[in-house]
Image (cartoon, rainbow, N blue to C red):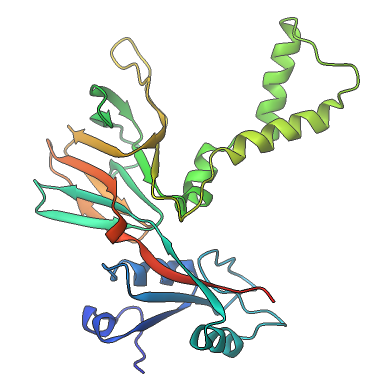
Length: 271
């Protein structure tokens, strides 16, 4: 067994191991996962501070399951093994690439600046857009940043319903409006979530600019392949909250999901 701090973890440590345990929170898990480039090496996260960290990607200790119990379950086969799919980003004509377990943001270094690019979804025509960037994410990432970006609040849906009533729309008399608004809100927000085991990716355009020049008709959805051709001088890729890559003006980034990029992980079997 080898122990390594997140700042000193090396690719040699990863290659040596049959099992990689990331102790900490989701941040440590994502950092560790970024160093694993095959689909057959098991990585397990252990949330070492469940009182202050939710740790969605990690096994969570509890009164019934201590950290030692969780590790014993991993070693004794008391877990379900499964793959979380990742987004592959390739640029500079295939010279560079990275994998994202949660998401990749294509955007400006300065968040106050707009990005200028062509967006191509699958085999559709290119659409020139200006926005605060494009977030490309997996099912795992759909419950994280992407969820908070895409979801709508009760207050917003309630305002839309009020406008609809003012325009003459009516609802059945037996409908409890507060409950109905919550039901509609929850139903919509659930459509933005999909399983990390699904071999697909989704994208969201952040704060699209809509003017006489920019239409931004394609702002959200699923894709098998995504191309972004950037025309900004300070654009970059922000990957899983901890990796950043500089993009040059004119860079073309291709996004896809490939079976060989999936990450092998585990969850505790409920008894």
